Image (cartoon, rainbow, N blue to C red; front, side):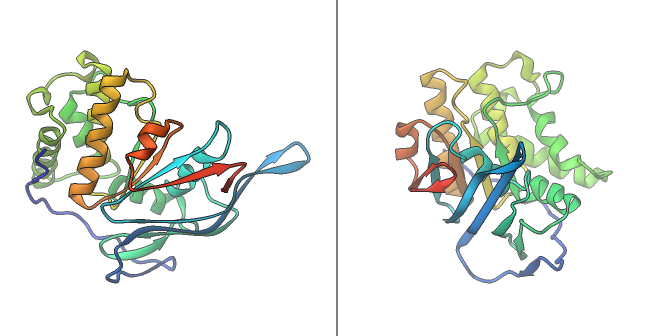
Length: 255
């Protein structure tokens, strides 16, 4: 599998009170004593209970556990989709070290576009857009791109579709693609912003075994070759065993 991508420019993140200048650490994500609770009647239920973990660049971590154990809640915290009650979620970007637990919504949205790629159970693509347009749209969110920026986005989109084996389908509407092909587009879309971290929540659960294995090959291969950290949430022991490391979450805690 070739992961050679043509070079395109990217904007650097601006440091805030929640960032530090980047160092030489190979750690992409460090979660420290994170607690997340939700209201439950008159009390609160603990979804994530003092969880700590690290993922290195180019390495993969599987998060396993029974349904309702807190796996997806942990991923949501790491994705800036939910703010924890306490703890740190430190993301090492190329420019700064960011505590995702303290940033505001605007900064969180920016990081999800540029530094955090997410692959969901369903591909969540727009059927009216082509495979290439799905990826290009990620580069345009919240901006009015110049002609040069549009060209750079198209170049990267085409390169990524080549990487996932869909280069000859770049101009095809995703509504005409198979489930496995759509999930390949979703993986390419997650890589569009040159992320430091990819989070995948049961990415093969809606696919047959052959398509699921191909998507898993793609996720593990591309993130490793591109030096991107991968967190995979799964209930499938076979998929988890393919990752570099595993943790099991039960009742919100690592066991």
